[in-house]
Length: 286
Image (cartoon, rainbow, N blue to C red; front, side, top):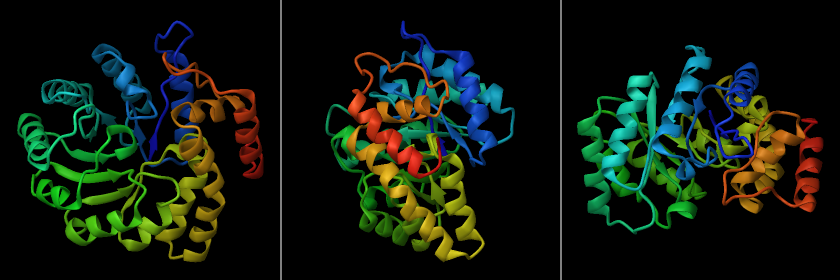
């Protein structure tokens, strides 16, 4: 699944037409689902109204072709519940809920936060762990406790630790879907018993990411491994080296209408674009 960018106009408004064109591109390239308003969608910089509007556009344009998992995590429990209820009313299939950021929360506070959301909204929920943005880790033991909630159905772990993913699978892999959250761990996560991936590189390489999963399901592990290895340089430049804006830059280089970054984010320098362009060319994406 693709945790996709949100195209903005230069004045910061959501570019609806560009978003619809990008959604068409991802669906046509075999993506298994769409995840609006996650980290790559620059959700922390969007108003509640704009976040709801983005989900509404995606749900409308997808029209049931693939699942839509709306990013509804926010700083407070109250706002997260409000966003999750709105996503359900709009017609999203599930919610991806990041751990609250800014303050470092205790394990008890995290459990109480997610439990309150689960009790307030009857909707499938996926936990979202991304320590590089939130400043702390959602521990496997906490995931195991939250997996007891009926509507917690999965976790996207973007911590980059295969050891942690393995431990989560050991603890709860028979109860919820454990999904890779970084593009370098799609194949290893599947081999350990994970169910799939929600990865930034699927913005630019949706077909290639989906083919890793497809080859794995067919038992063609050698092909799945080879495809994974070919994606490593793309993951390096789009997530490890240049961050969220890099996905938009890659799509723009591919002549897709990714739009402008949301301030205070800004476009990358030309040397970064040159490096991204080379990686895309090596993958025959341009």
